[in-house]
Each structure stands twice: as C-alpha cells, then as structure tokens.
Length: 559
Image 1 (tube, helix red, strand yellow):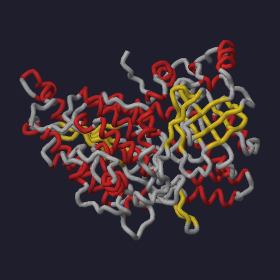
Image 2 (cartoon, helix red, strand yellow):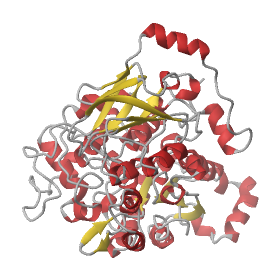
Image 3 (cartoon, one colour):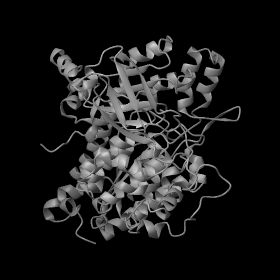
C-alpha cells in the first residue's frame, strides 16, 4: 500500500494536536497507521429515497472498522424531487447535485481522507457523489440506498408517476376523487427510490456499469436484507481498493462511459442521464459529447420493458438478473467493451463470466437482443434551428415520434400546468415551456407535472412538449428537453411566438420552427435578456456560473 494521504494529519510530532482531536472521536494509538475512510451518509427523513440510508451507513462503518480501516461518517444533503415537483422548490433539485458534490469534496479533502464510501438514494445523490469522486480521485465506492417496491392497488403496480397521471385523469373526468385518493395512499409503500427506471435507478445502474459499485447492487430493493449485506461487502471492497490503489479515474475511461450509455439505452433510462454523464465525464477529463449518445443509440436496442413507458419496475429487473444480465447480453452482441475494470479490479468480461447468455425464460422484463422492444435506443438527440447545440427526446412508448403543429407558449411550468388542467391544450399542439433552463429557471426544473397531466388526459400521442428545462425519469410521451441554447441566453426558443409552426421529428433527429433565418435575426434584434430572477442566495450564484445543458450544466468549467 502506498503512503496514506491521511498521514498528513496523523504522522509526526507536529501532528500531536491533530491526533488529540482524532482520539476524542474514537482513535487509539494503533489506529493512526490505518486508512481513514469517509462515509458520506445521505440519510434524511425528507424523502423515502433516503430514509433507510442510516442503517446502511452503520453497516458500512462497522465493516470498514472490521477490515482494518477507520471510518469517519459525515452527512450530505438531499432534496426530494417528488415532493418539490411542480413548485418553485424544484429549482433547487439540480443545484443540489453541485451542493452534494461540493460537500463530499470539502469533507474528504479537508480531513485528508484516504477513500470515501458514498451512500445515497434520491436522484441527485448519485451524480453528485460521482462528481466529487471524479474530482478527488481517491479510492471510492458508491452504495445505492435501493429502489422502492411497487405500490399495489387492485392488483396493479403503482409508482409516484401514477399519482401525477391521476391528477390529469381527474381533470379530464376519467377518474373520480375517490380513485385519486386511493392512488395517493398506495403508490409509495415504504423506503426506497422511485420504482421505475426513473432517474435514481438509471444513475445507480450507470455507477454499477462504470465499476464504482458492486455488481447487482444497483437494482436491489431498499427494504431487503441483501441491501444491508451488500453495504458491508462494498465497504470491505473499498478497503481492499485502498490497499491496491485502485482509483476512480482508472475506471472512468472513455470506454466505460460508452458502456454506461449503452446500458442506459438498453434499459430505457432517464433523459437526466445525458445531463449527468456529460457532467461526470467533463469532471473526469473524458471526452464525451451529446452527439455520442445519438451514435450509441443507433446501435443499441431497448431490451428491458420497464416503467415509465413499459410494464415492469426495477425490483422485477433485479429478479430477472439485474444489470449484469443486461450487460452480458450487450457484451455477447459486441455492444459494450469487456476490458473495462471495476472497483474489485476485475474486467467486465471476468465479472460477467458466470452470468447466463440468455435471460431467464420465466420472466418478461429482459428480452433477448434479437427480440427487442425497440430496435434503436429511446434517447434521441435532436438538433435544428430551435436547438443548435442539441436537445434530448425520450421516444420510448411513442407510436408516432413525429409531430408538426402550432406553438403554445408558456413562460413557466406553472402557467403551462394551469392551462392543461383547464383543458386548453388540444390535439396537435406543440407545448413550449421556456425560461426554465439552467440559467433562466434557474435550476432547470423537471416537467413531470405537465407531462403526466397531458398523458392522464389521453393526449400523450397527440401533443408534443418541448422545453429548455428537463424531465423527470418518470416522464414519457413525445417530449423534448434540454433545448440549448436556452431562452435566457438568447437561444432561438426565446424568439418563437404563439402559433408558429414547430416540427418535432425524432425519426430524423430534427427540431425546428418554420421561420427563416432572416425572420429569426429580426426577432433577435427585438429580444432583450431577462433580468435574473434571484439576486442573492444559492440560486443567484448558480445562475451566474452554470454552463449550458449541452455541456452537462456544470458549474466548474475551466476558464
């Protein structure tokens, strides 16, 4: 084992005061030569996603100590996307990714820790931890808090999206208030992150593919005992990684990111994965662009039938073999790189050696490569005069991914939702929500409430919704987000008017408004930059430094 980073605070006569502080929190003479490992505990009672994390953190802490290292636990924040959705509070969601990353980096580097075991649950916990891990490049492992089990109502599997869609169903007269109340009371049955292949489960899968969490750990249910055992094993593996000096940037290679994108496509993952992977790759110093997602999409089919657009939830995927089974199918098809390494020091090919070539015959969640749900991936990158830098469309479950219609312009999510619930949106409309981007929101809110209301009203196949904001992993339908440049910085989405004809063509990767370059230039001369919505606090700071979404909405671009 190389010289420990923590020797900066534990070794030498001059560090006697430092050691005295450590003695007060449980260190003894024999402990000062052991690796010090941060346990970044995302536990909170804010959200069901994180309510079970303290138990996992305690398990990891005990396993670290038993493995000959010294754990030091500290807290990281979380916010609940599900609770803040549709409110001004949602502006803080993407911002929390940066706060989580900054807090982990701050604690670990300030205390000269030798490694970090990050434990998280809700959506931004995963990319936030990964940004910090990439920045520090000390031996690291991520422990996912686990997915929630599905809610049940009359034999039907429910998720949080069921509640959002029920709102739209109520306003269109499809259900009554009694049914809405039943869905509300039954869709979230306990601890764990939202149950479909939404953002949390997508990003946990990404981390497993990148090699920074243990195989099969990304799809475990939060309330199952195997999750606790996996936490212990993760801690032991991390201690060994410190001894072997296996570092995150050894694993986070270009090939590893390509593997992650391939798996995202195969499982039907969240649009947010595009944003987060771009940010993580930028921090890791790996060349990755929004166009790489389209290149890989063209080659990788969707082989998992998962919510929000499919039938099954993440615990079903786990029971069918989890991410290792998906990876084995892709490996055999030549769609992922088998020589990438994981935190255990094993290659993907080696770690998948005992995984069956074909998924179990008694399940319908994972399909064989020759019988996919869709022949191409579901996250399409669209460009055109409305998105010169690109945008992200999620087209799984969409029968006709092409629509041309009149623009219905809204300057905020709230005004759009109000119009939808008044039944003012009609078949053939292209709903535009702007000034919700990283700078303009600020914070790039998720538009789950409007999209779910549209689906709930039965318009999911007949209406397109485009925005410079983003979407929940629970969103589906003909939706296009991450439009860049955004409205607040003068992107062309700021220039369109009510009734302008917009085409969304996911088959040909085009998003455009039927306006000439000359007309757009004329309108730009009349446009003025909107005043910042916030003058102080975290949102004001974020708005001043955040990058465009096509670069991952990062806050630490090199100048």
